[in-house]
Structure formats: C-alpha cells, structure tokens
Image (cartoon, rainbow, N blue to C red; front, side, top):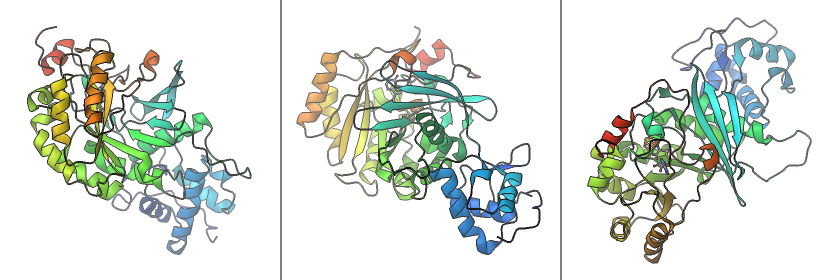
Length: 398
Ligand code: SAH
Ligand code: SF4
C-alpha cells in the first residue's frame, strides 16, 4: 500500500468512466463492471499495477460480503480506505415501503434518483425463492393487459439501480454471509427474473452489466441459468441475450394470430409472430435443457380457445419450449377478465399432450398488487387515461 498522499478529489474522465457522479462529487461503485471499477480506482489515485488486486478486494467486500462502509474493508490499509471514502460511495436505491402478502410474497417500493419509483417483488416457494426486478421506470410499450404499460416511460434504470434491487432484497432477507460463520449454501434468492416493470431489451447495456455483476463468482454468484430475462419480442436484441448475458429467455407471446397479438402486444406490429419465431429458432445455445419459456396470459374470450391452443402447438413446432400460462391478474380499469379455471386447464392439457410442459402460474401476492403485470408506481408522473388504454386494446369506448 503506497498511497500515503491524500488523494486529490476524483476528476471524472468521462471516456474512461461513463457513469454518473453524485452531487457531492463522489461516484457510486455499485453497478460498475470490473473494467469500470478499475478505471475509477485508477482515476482516484490507485497505482495501475495495483488496480486489478484492488478491484478484486473491493468487489468482494461489496458483492460477497455486502459491506457498505469503506472503513469495514479491513484487508485494505487505512489510508486507502480513506481514499475510497473520499472519492466513492456504495449506494443502493432507497426502500420506501415494504409490503408482505398473506402468502409471504414481499413487494418493495424503491425510490431512485430523480424521485422516481419502481417495484421489486420477492416470491418464496418451497424449492426456490424468486426475485422479480424492474429494468425501467414504466415502459414505452403499451401491452393492453399490463398495468405497467399504462404508465408512460420515465427513464431507463442504471446498472447500479438494477443490481441494487438484488442487493436491497438481500439486505431485507438477511442473505449476506456472516464473516466467520460456517458457509450456508441455502439461497433465499435462488432465481432472478427480469419480469418487473419495463422492457429489458430496451435497456440492454445496463441490464447486461447488472446481470454480469449478479453472476460474478466473486460476489453474489448466481448461475446464469438462474436468471430469466422476459421480453415482449424486441427481435433485433434477442440473440444478444444469449451471447452477451447467457441467461435464460422468456417471451411474452400471448396470442396465436397477428390480429390478436397486434392488440395485446403492440410491438407485434413491428416484429410479427413469424419474425419473432424465426429469431427464437435461431436463438444461440437453444437446447432441451435451456428451453425458451413462452408466457401466455389467459384472457377470457380473447386468446383462450381450444383453437388457440392447437395453433400455439403448431407455432412452437421445432423450438425447445415450455409454455407458462398466466391467469390474468386484474388491476383497476383493466379492459380484460381472467379466463375460467376450466378454460385454463383445457388449454394447458392440449399443450401438454403435444409434448410441451405447460405449468399454470399461481398468482402470488395479489392482496398487495404484487402479481405479474400489476406493478405500477403509485406516484407516476404521467398517466394514460382509460380511454387511451381501451383504444390501444382496440376495444373502443369502455
Ligand atoms: N416487459 C417484459 C417483462 C415484464 S412483464 C415483457 O413484457 O416480457 C412480465 C410478464 O407478465 C410478461 O409476460 C407480461 O406479459 C405479463 N403480464 C403483464 N401484465 C399482466 C397481467 N395483468 N396479468 C398477468 N400477466 C401479465
Ligand atoms: Fe411493457 Fe412488458 Fe408490460 Fe408490455 S408486458 S407494457 S413490454 S412491461
């Protein structure tokens, strides 16, 4: 440790460190890639030849031990800890409220810079615990059955805000390892799904950087197959999910004809079912052990007939796939109803008999509006009217 000189305040080199500096001049280390952190530490006065080792140490404190205070980084010399504290912060989004459902589901309302809010949901099950995180505040897309789609996009989340959601949930669940305690392999958060607010493929770089951090072996170390990214079908970005992140893919399919999908998932007007299926057939690394999940929301009288089920089977042919049937979760002003249990089971049986797994997703946390598609910040800035929602759904006046 040779940094006896007090460090000069960090002068950001915008090219080396493409990240935001807080008003107090300090940079948040959370969300930086290893390369980004290296550049930041060097810019703050870390000698280049030490930089790799320093990144390794700081990384482990932040992402393995969950430490937020530089003074707790006890394998670093005091003057280096001071240098870090003068230049950097370790900051997560702020949890505004936490609600716990009767079924154990937890929903966090989280505030990010600018006063915006997003939601994060933790779903405990017998054999796993899934954390559903958001990638944008609101969504630019306007799927007519989705509550988030009624909220205009405010902005993309940064990588810090995305990985921060995983970290704050670990805080709340007490999941960081305790130094000196025997290693505990049970994982409360065993899976992460990008199925909260926003379209992750419209914020690709930040989602990728955040997921790389979550997967990094020296930190949170979640395996790539424990992460699922759900897209509405942003065709040009789909292959990058495999090549640059390597996680599993889910697609919000929801309809078996272009006419219906145009209304439910309007991005279909840009990339229709045939184009989407071509991209999925070409998905790198697709195999029986890494199947694509087709999400299919069950809407009464809209997409839930036997004919739909048979058409879906035809469309899936040749793609290693499973179909996740999601009973529609209602929200105030929603223009659809949930299909009956009978319809859903008949549909599931047809898919199943054709050789595809077709689980029916049990709605979780409905009492706290935490179920799929119910997320929406209560303090949103811009709200679409009921008439706009109905028009987008092709329903005319409601
Ligand atoms: N934007 C991405 C990920 C977020 S939505 C996407 O659309 O894939 C996660 C899943 O919940 C999607 O399949 C979405 O279509 C579904 N969903 C949205 N609103 C819903 C609702 N009200 N009931 C049930 N599922 C819904
Ligand atoms: Fe956006 Fe996904 Fe909701 Fe569609 S379903 S509006 S893409 S969050």
